[in-house]
Length: 395
Image 1 (cartoon, rainbow, N blue to C red):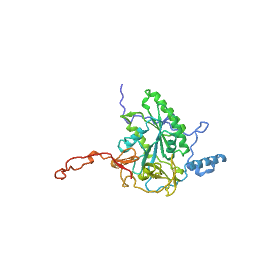
Image 2 (cartoon, one colour; image 1 turned 120 degrees about the vertical axis):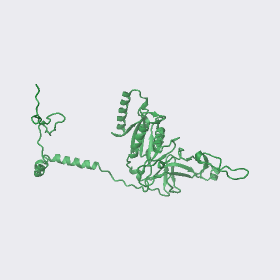
Image 3 (cartoon, one colour; image 1 turned 90 degrees about the vertical axis):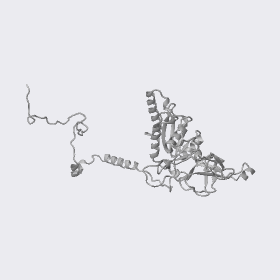
């Protein structure tokens, strides 16, 4: 039997709030598990003595802790003695042999400049943003090179063979970095494509990460380069690494800011040839090129060249910036034609500097000369002549 009831006669249950479960409103409880009565802010203001500390020792301890937390946030102000455009930040790529140092530098240069680097020789300067330049240096695999690299590194990329683990070169370089102020350090795991078992790969990553944290600090950044694609690292992985490098803040070290130093991009022997012909072991005049960092370099002071000794400066000259920052006009981003680079020893660009010569590289379609007839000696406007790599002796 069906009964039709109107909407007005239908009864509704009242809403009942949750008493338990994740949706129930939690009320504060005391140590004994009983619900505490909520105290309003007006009650605290009306009777402040009722809500004061019962123990003066506890109050003093909490006050000291609050002051310590505030002091921990403060840093000693560091005076920036540089003026003008800042010098490029130096990024040292270090690792044992056959771990992929040169390949990582080539991949990062390709990401920033869209150019393929033929060979990694000497410092490589690139423009990574409107107000930032980077200089990549590959650390040699000997103790003297590690000591020199630790002196000028702003950021160190520690390359670790994930298939083998940590090697002695990595621990030696970390010990040297600790003695030179410990600049920023980031780890990069390579050769992870040799793992066939996903579970073993996951456990190895976790083990190496915690070992890396033991050496540096808990939470230190560790990147993973899974494998090679067409002879280069994955674009997405290189892009993530480049983003971290581009936004990283570098804390200047006090010893470096108080002393001038130069990382030499290239050098030239300007000794007169007649003096060299007369005496093969005569004193040489060497011209060194590079960005000045730290404080000002004064004329007549003695400088130390790593591995050579102490020498006096004959002259100091300020030159035009070979890799300037983009124009100061406000733009949304860095245009492709403004992505500059400067690698004088690596052959990237139009000039290649060697110990005794400078090679000018000109593309074939840029070199065009008019052909001259032998009879009339009149240029016809036809013909094409091209040449590459013109050697020029050093000045």
